[in-house]
Length: 177
Image 1 (cartoon, rainbow, N blue to C red):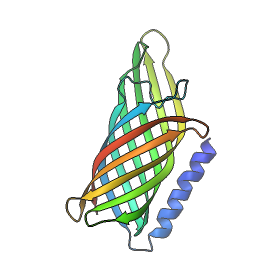
Image 2: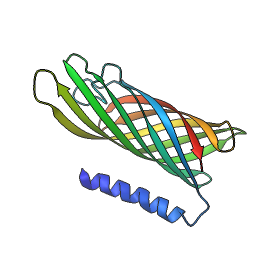
Image 3: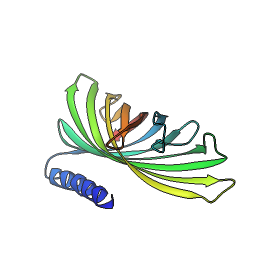
Image 4: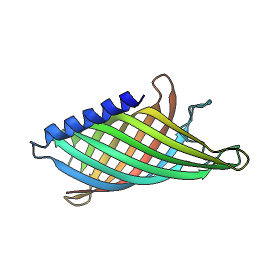
């Protein structure tokens, strides 16, 4: 699994590095997120009762119609049906395609790899940690408030390659450098 993660990160770096010769645009922003679990076994996105979090996004648009992004999100809270707390850091590397752009709105399709680094702190037994990789696909839109500031809405689905695990949605604001 570490090799898969390394290859994916290297691919993102190569795409970003080769794009530096072009006139690209870097962006940075903040997001809030909400997740919905649908899996019934150990494949939950989170065991938190109300899995909501916050994070940052870094992006690089290397072509008018394509870009790459990194999102880091953190959430914590009480677990469902267990006495204890989950702390979850999710990092995602995604590729974006922008097929349609209207006057102030840009729609996109994204896909990538998300890594859940979870820690469960139980009240009645030893703590546990887990790193769970998931595939992510999504759609979204950026609405420009000014030439450099945009509001972002995104909906994504998560899976482990064999099973659909759940969905997530984010809203954020991004500044283009």
